[in-house]
Length: 165
Image (cartoon, rainbow, N blue to C red):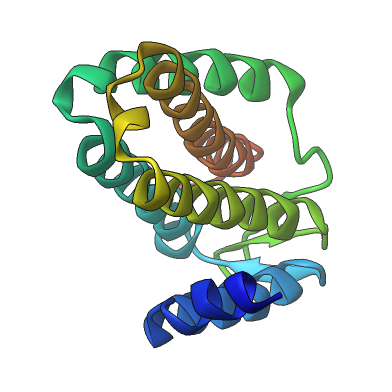
């Protein structure tokens, strides 16, 4: 118990702020929303940038190809799935109506927890950063999670032939 308290006491305050932000944003996504084109692209851009930064800072630029493979694989799967299928374009408000879902919260928490666990693991065992299997596995996962968000936004934007640029 004392070790756990020592670990928690060394976690920067801003990490808890990020977790709170993720929880708020995820809860908002659980309800139907109207979103403009720009807002639909913010989340995937943030997670893609966070993923690239996380992979590069943990493993170096050499791990980015694995991140790219994860991105392409998940993007392809999400684009083929059509998720989320219930979204529609509302021409009157010039926005996309997206059905509520808990999936974005689950995905954001997966990214947060994975990044947190990786950070803790590397802090306790820095040699893991040089393990190819660790670098490849985490890089694939971060790329895949980023690709899911990108594919979701792309599918929502493509849901209407009436949407204008």
